[in-house]
Amino acid sequence: MSHAPATQSPDPHGRQRWFALGVLCLGVLMIVLDTTVVNVALPSIKADLRFTDSALAWVVNAYMLTFGGFLLLGGRLGDLYGHRRLFLLGIVAFTLASLACGLAGSQGFLVAARALQGIGGAVVNAVALSLIMDLFTEPADRARAMGVFGFVCAGGGSIGAMLGGFLTGALSWHWIFLINIPIGLAVVALSLRLLPASQTSAQGKQLDVAGAVSVTTALMLAVYAIVNGNEAGWTSTRTLGLLGGAAALLCAFLVIESRARVPLMPLGLFRLRNLATANVIGVLWAAAMFAWFFLSALYMQLVLGYTPMQVGLAFLPANLIMAVCSLGVSARLVMRFGIRLPLASGLVFAAIGLALFARAPVHGDFVLDILPAMLLLGLGAGIAFNPVLLAAMNDVAPSDSGLASGIVNTSFMMGGALGLAVLASLAAARSSALAAAGSDALVALNDGYHAAFLVGACFAALAALIGAALLRASMPSSAPAGSAVH
Image (cartoon, rainbow, N blue to C red):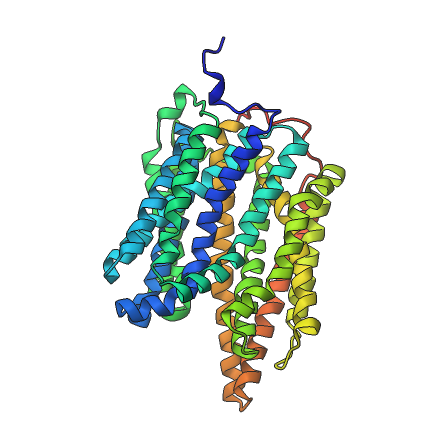
């Protein structure tokens, strides 16, 4: 017999849970925007706070380090102490850190505040997906809700580029952070009213401290090695040492988890085929997506001479297609055909779009050389992102949903960071070789991007093959039951 007040949990068949989804998506959008909005403002931050080029990288790296490092721990803490509680703590931490960033008057203060932002952002990202799984248990509604969430995650980055250009130009770089304050306060107020109170088990009060420390440190070392790989050199002692240290800590983590009474990550989770496969696909898919977003923006700016605002507008058709597919088409495809076919088809469309970018000329025309690739990539992302998330989350017991969300978010983050580093390195090496051989500077630069786009297309095609071959096709008919992964 339950004594909880009715207001604590949204009506599972009513409108309140859709309002709750809107609140969750607003919180996640704030995090997603922040990863791209800062990039546009970096020149202004550099000039104002007198950063050197190497020090300026820490405005981005400090955020990525803590964000990548705390995704897994944030998700597990949500399972142990309540998804809503951790979501609120994450939003509050991110909002306060945004205030600190906006008021920063020194380099060290800004970098420290960005690191705190990363922790808050990791917690929000890791538990938001679990809250959606808690709110939507019917397959059709869950597919639609995940489509909305997927659109916010996949489409928010390009909105951030336009917003960053506008705020920095019209006001100052401080406002790219200060704009988060009213949004964060609104999300907290609405979350208290709309999100369901968390139900946690008695066992859920024990935290595997050794596992948490080892995996968080390992992920932070790996992120640091990856984001600095191009600058330090991929075969340098520092890079190899950091990657070796990360690998050793991950091995130690696995040993700890195999022996812990209540492990941070029950290793039996990876016996769930769709979860394991979705994480491999997530790494490859994120690498392909980063190739699209960052390298196509560089092609348009550095080769075609587009302004930042023109680049943002060039992404608009892809975002519109992505919105149409994510918010309606993808859910219907999943309900009709299951997870496997829409996922593989979307990734094939994305691979073709990247391959088209691999032939874009130096004097490219928007309608002929950019728009077709953008439309295919928007279509692919809109169709594929929802099935990837569903594949990762649908077979997982509710008590492990935060951890599963943290794992898939970590896969996307690490895949994106590693993919971008590798593809940027490949593009630079190809351009340098052509320039040394006497090619025109612009032609050499463009050919470097061609090589990177082609490899990105291969990543997407490989992800499509893995999904088609290994994923179970069907959607479950009900919410997952508890699994004996412990």
